Amino acid sequence: MPELPEVEVSRLGIAPHLEGQQIAQIVVRDRRLRWPIPSEVELLEGALIQRVERRAKYLILHTDKGFLILHLGMSGKLRVVPRDSLVVKHDHFDLTLTNGQCLRFNDPRRFGCVLYSAEHPSVAHPLLVELGPEPLTEAFTASYLHAKAQGKQQAVKTFIMDNHVVVGVGNIYANEALFKAGIHPKRAASRVSLARYQRLVPIIKETLIAAIAQGGTTLQDFTQADGQPGYFKQHLNVYGRGGKQCMVCKTELSEIRLGQRSTVYCKQCQR
Ligand SMILES: [Zn+2]
Image 1 (spheres, rainbow, N blue to C red):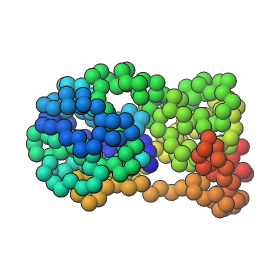
Image 2 (cartoon, rainbow, N blue to C red):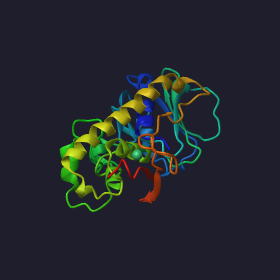
Image 3 (spheres, rainbow, N blue to C red):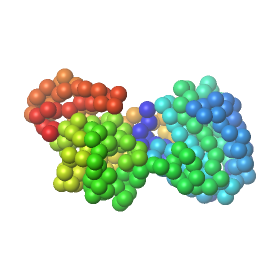
């Protein structure tokens, strides 16, 4: 599943090809995504694309005729190709440009979405209005997290993965960041001190920034017919390593389910 870094790299990959361009036509080949593609998306024909923004794992195209919201779901991929290039299976949606190019959305599993919003979706669209702050902004601080955790009995790992608390901390990043910060994933969010959140927050930011930087090497893939950036290979300390040795202390890593998600930690290094 594309996580925040993959979505940010998708934004970096498509934005230069879209910003300042005019939309010629909206082509819907199959409406049946996670939610049906609404006919309002056709209101964007003739619109000028001003910029491409990312909010959580949504991409938002700003135009002078409203906003297009895109989500990659489990398997969605975006590519900028000549508008007459060969359509393949699962190419559900095209946004063609007057310069002859098009933004093409392919999604085999169809958990992605393409939606329209007349107003900025962060204030007007139910999927986006209640999202917590972006992890890579100044709004996401240790004191914010510590204040938000007061009275919360839920496990700290579940807490930092909650989109209402902060967006974009997916399962891999939560596992890795808690290991690096030495925090036990099952510890109650309210029982993590401010000092420990002060250690955790920069680690979350660094982990995400490193993944985005790694994905930066794949930017040209967005305009190549064959290639698409896959998951960014990263150095993982705990995720996917249950039962193996801790890289720091050699203790066997424990694996449990927390909120239905695989959780791996070192009972020696994480308290
Ligand atoms: Zn250890």
